[in-house]
Length: 210
Image (cartoon, rainbow, N blue to C red; front, side):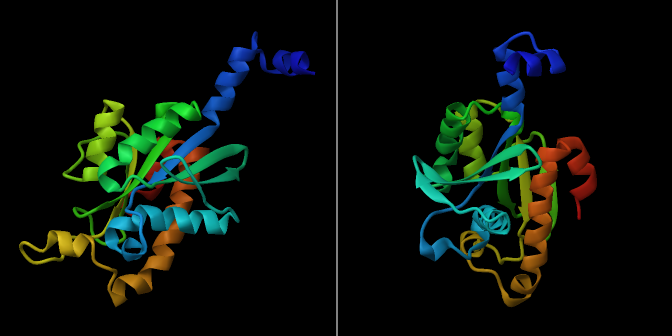
């Protein structure tokens, strides 16, 4: 049976088959802080997006090493959703561990994070870039030793007074934001699935700025 499959697809070894399977597996990481007090804060939008996606795909998170994980299947692709339990500043530790454990190639990593430099609800997918002062991205860059990894930035805007950035980021969504959040979460979930199915370039063209 395996020989027949290999002949169909032109594979000469099990190694080539394994390589193809690796390319169908993705690690989607939502950045955030653990604990009830952080659940509805702007800084935890990464967690919130993954929670929404998992629920819609009828999957649940289980606590494992360095984070909570859920797995969903999307048209032959396996998406491993990770919410690190290391707190934001050590996010890279969990990301590196699960990339290596699941043997997922770096190009199949997507890190979901908040971004002060984008208007509320604005979506931006990039294949590389600086950490922009974000501690979660800073640790990810440090642990992976590269700035060339996919990141999905969700805009939380910068409507705070001088010296109030920390309070704003760790503050909860206001009423206006909450009223628009459901639709933004739905679009964010579609972006993530498109990333796995259509690839990063097509997804950037379709969703960036939407």
